[in-house]
Amino acid sequence: MTSYAPPSTVYRYNVAIRLLHLALVLLCLAGWASWQFADDYKNAGHLGFSVHKWIGIGFAVAISLRVLYGLIGPRATCFANWFPFTVSNLKLSAQDLLQLARFRVLEREPHEGIAGLVQGIGMLAFIAIAATGVVMALYLAPGSRTTGWLHGVKEIHELAQQIIPVYLVLHVGGVAVHALIGQDLWRSMFFLAPRR
Image (cartoon, rainbow, N blue to C red; front, side, top):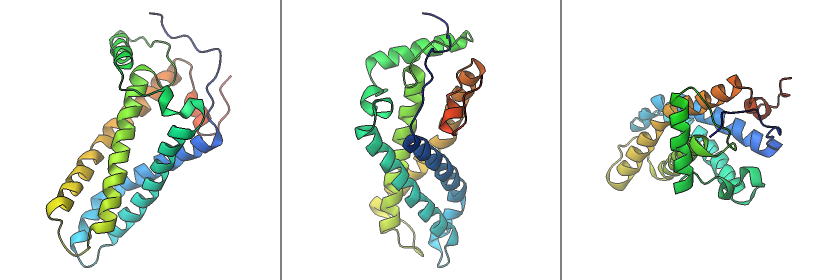
């Protein structure tokens, strides 16, 4: 195992993936901030729920486009090239954790090892949030409480939302670690030129 050395090639994502990433960031943060007001769906007046629902529908569209792009898009963004839940990637993730405990970062492709694992968990949480949110947007009648199967969907939605802050800390933390060692991938995601 070798310590991280800045790659000779800089990973660049195309405009479509960067715009999707930006949309997901903004909609995720807006949805996460607005869910605290969405509990007013039980009332006849339900502005908080309505705002959260429309943000959620936008998020569901964005995550659906990201999944579609992950299935048919270019190689760098294609899920087939970075599916994180394989035995080999879980071994790489374990190696990454051991090295991080020693304050070392291994050289990896952008979605290998722990980075891919964090991305995979985030994608699964986002898909769960979007799917359950769409079901609630279609079937939840404002002014009434959830019951039966719809209450179960609401509980899954709320549970998946609890993963967001953990995911954001891990994702932003990973980006920060890579920036500290000279791999400023975050700059290209926000349309900034690489640092010289």
